[in-house]
Length: 254
Length: 280
Image 1 (cartoon, rainbow over the protein chains, first blue to last red):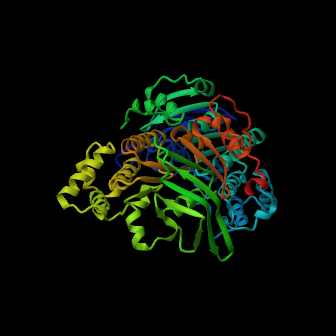
Image 2 (cartoon, rainbow over the protein chains, first blue to last red):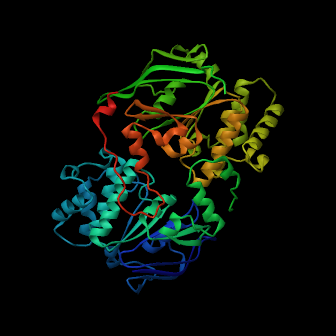
Image 3 (cartoon, rainbow over the protein chains, first blue to last red):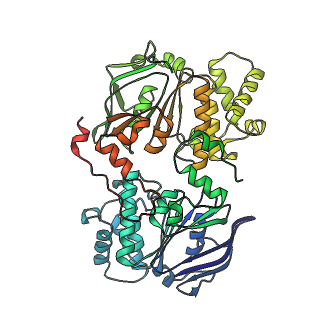
């Protein structure tokens, strides 16, 4: 479904992605883990066309992407951003937020589509004419997911979709994402700094550091802690909570 | 660890007067704190931060604090004049805020901010203060204290900024530190490194610590005792080491809904809330 070969990207003189290779099968779920500045979000942003300066090969549905993306690309691939407080227009109602992509793509029948999209993310009709500030963080993230789903895409790019949420709300949103993938046959690339979230959601995982993939693992490898690279081991240990001895073993990876 | 009570809070209530009516943020919180590390855990809106802020008299102007008792040693925190507060805040109780990006002064060098914090409470000359500030930056494991001393907050990373905050809050040598989500804005490994620094300093200087966080796992691995808050109430108080024996369904729910690295992709248990929890 998605194949990325030797992807390199730059922000001015900063070489932020270095030879990144990713392959995601249809209906698969791929996780990218890393700390801030590792380039994990940049991979997603390059796929959606938010990064200008890149080289390499990105194939979506066996079709190679050029420097710009057209409408058919966005009907196939949609993205959900980290912060539901920043990604929804504060002065647009939920109805308008959801109708806008339908109109841009000229799909018609927007009324029924909005109702269906809200239902898919577990929000009832009473939310339709509210503004984002009247919703909680979890409800907003559901709206952001509904906005991505309304174009019936086959691929969702998820950039830290739950890191701004409480753990109990995170569980609900993760369950929602798993259900949608099952029911709609979606393909995910998910970015997170939380190893446990990615281990729970994804089949294949890549650990990134300074723009490079340092290790690849399957969910079961991760469950057993079978990681080779010292950086991934450090990340794995850090996920276990505070332990003075573990902290002393940390190495800086600058 | 001494058992002497440092801070005693009984039946603390914080109410905010808003255009939509009163919002009851903290409802009858009571605890005694010795020289120990106390964690306060809860979701957003549970009142954990407002509890911490009320202790330092930092509640917003539309908020009203009432308590049967709120004493720090023999100081009655409920009835202090602004002048008396200045002798307590910073000098005896201080607070580490969540995000160094917003809590450091952007137009003042880091060194000047630390010196300001120190000289507010200690009468020393500029040279001595500078010397102290650099020692303190060294104590929070900043590798090049001279350079950081002369930098502005935007020139350092998030983890470094939070170390600077810790340095600034610890330099007047307070007895109690309230840390409100001090590491939530940081990467996991940096988060643990910053906590280790806080751990060492609090231990060496014999300070008490109130650690406010939404992360139950992290708090229980760091603190001695944990208060779990839900809608302004303390629903459970447990020893951190006995977290897995938690009895309250809310605490259990918070623990269960965390994704685990066991390769299991089935749905996570959802926290079912009951109205009765908020009555306690």
